[in-house]
Length: 281
Image (cartoon, rainbow, N blue to C red):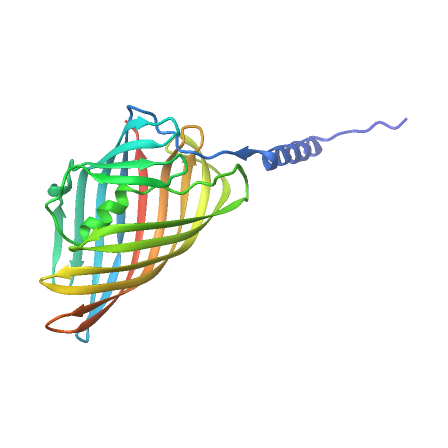
């Protein structure tokens, strides 16, 4: 009888094959599991460039924002919905162009509370402003988006390589008016990675956005229309049920039409990169 010799290389290949087969069958049920009474803090840093044309002249600007957002879990309801009291611990806005170079500490935003009810899958059920904000302007829209940044999770269990879709329709207060914001995303579970000391699932996403609304500036009405493309990666701790890191890029084209004493159309293109990171205590 011949002896069969199994080399270390063959053993290694067998081990890799078994490991791959096991991982291929592993499934995950994603859900937000923020705990009642706990406080979570996220750092959100945004940077990018804007080009707009007005009266035949082109203006280029670089923009940035640095915010720390506080999420206090006020309650977790029987159906799993979470009640958040959300506010900003810090908010700094910067803008640089040929005409000005300015940095503003948005003190009017600090500590102003908003109440959100969010489902375990990340759907915003309701929102309520608890403390009014004196500041009126274009920054309020970005502030609201940073407060309500919850990735939509799939309803069913998923395995590596699975995909799902997400549609979000939201209304944002901006410059004395309201802007309807729609985002349609395709998401895919692509791997595992350790982030900020957390064992995370790596989820990539891409899709399109659309904005429409009516604004007010110096007594003039402005009509806003725009569309964009978004792509990014989010890292989700499935055990603790929370996002640890989210990195995204948005490229958009918008048009502002001014009516009233003078008519004017202002086209604007923008490219922004945002990184949102869970801050550990």
